[in-house]
Length: 289
View (cartoon, rainbow, N blue to C red):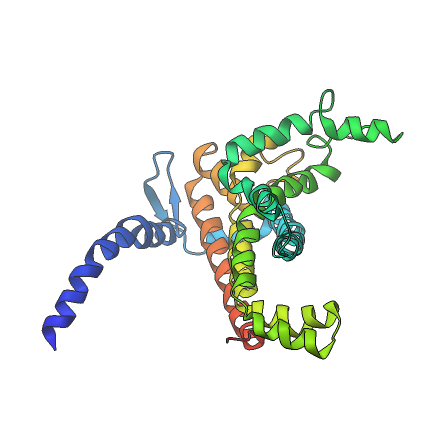
């Protein structure tokens, strides 16, 4: 009994070491630092307990960051999932040349966040960007996409949806192609409509894949950083200062490591609670074959 156990532990050892060094230790260190007053070198000075957390909840800047994060998640996750699902349904049709469209729909996976953000920065440029040219072409006034607090967060969200659609599309397309085609044959013989097949066959059989991409999309949306840093740097007027970017600014620009650690802990538990709620409320509706 001990020999297989020891063999299994030896196989797990490299992963356990990597998880311990790069995940568990930083997580425990962050929780530890969130309870202390930290100097500019990152060394704990005075134990303050939950004072860092109390200061955060009383901070208007953190409240703005929390609101921006919630709105960003609300903008990106539902629209991104619906768009990817529509594209996957279209790309799942067996028509000539569909491989070209599958490649195009998933092509954003091959681009880094930095490169994609630069492309969208040029598109949003007030003078030469294609967005304002399109508005001018239909007689509308130009918009300061990344400089107006009313539009900045939605503009970054649109870029994020475009960046993430390729991955979500590919996963959903794989799920669609794993559905038993005999179900559709039976529905065709019964003469039911396409809408009925979508509601009663496609979505129930695709529900495990939808559940997976929903969880992953939510977690990724809470952790968005790259495009925020490149496009807006949290501005204007902190309208795009999501919690992850606020953590970065407090830790590496303001050298307020205690506050940054407290925000990181709060973000961790927020993501954990949202994920657990998804498993509790949504997984029961998942139909496994």
